[in-house]
Image (tube, rainbow, N blue to C red; front, side, top):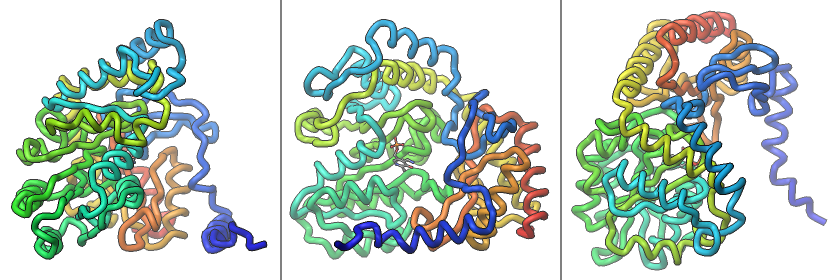
Length: 399
Ligand code: PMP
């Protein structure tokens, strides 16, 4: 018998070597209690959270919590069924209406996760004989959506407009084409030049899908994302988003103005063949999405936090993923996995949680400490964070 697990031997060896150094397992942290969107108890210690996607701090919003509790009482704990059978409740329609209003678009379709939204929409709309042209640093859910469908997949160099155009130019003129971009790329926290890229995509007759998972609620005058910020949202055919970041719960969605969009509800397998979101989740999501329409002050404070942390870390000598802060993600580049893990642990001992990211999730084989800010981090917390990074960085020998 061939052990089907032997293919994992390299990663098992790498993990064992890392843990043999005595470092705390960075991928096994338990939050014993979550105090607020920015503080949790980890290993019995109060810890500042700088590695969540709780950008707008909605997880403890009193209106959001109240809506969830009410839905539990009114509709029970789960739907026990697919959206196309017994799983569509008033709350599912209400959150889709909230999304249409939030984006000012005609159609919204909610999935059980953002991962499934990408999987479903991409694999369903791009079929045999079609082409998908996508940024090579696209999220795993986008790649998996490509794999699940039958379209020809044509990647291009990250954020490289000329490379994208070169690919498009070589494709048959009359073939169906879908260009897939992200507003914010979550590993380095950089944004895409969407306006220019979408203009080129349209020139070659391609439809455009933009994943705005990390920008929703924060970037753009109304928090609709990078496409809104760059004034090209009207040219986006499909926006993919998630409830697991700024919205503060779980779920995914696609919004679109395509006149035939509603047929997706019957032909999109990751929508049809899975249970719909629980009533409490869609109620919290709808309340949160509606509150995010009026969150300009929080957006402004989050930008302030992002700028302060970026400047503070750069001034201390850390190497960052972007020259300027472009989103709520500030990535700190580590020399290697060992020192990255040591730095991660040193920060945890200081009382700070960040995300450790390493290949294959990261571009160019990089090890990163990814810091994601929250609109509810106080200015004082951001200064505390810079102090923690400085002490840990000096101790580990990174600065
Ligand atoms: N798209 C992007 C760009 C993401 O970063 C993520 C999650 N990190 C997803 C989609 C999937 O979202 P979800 O957590 O709702 O599955």
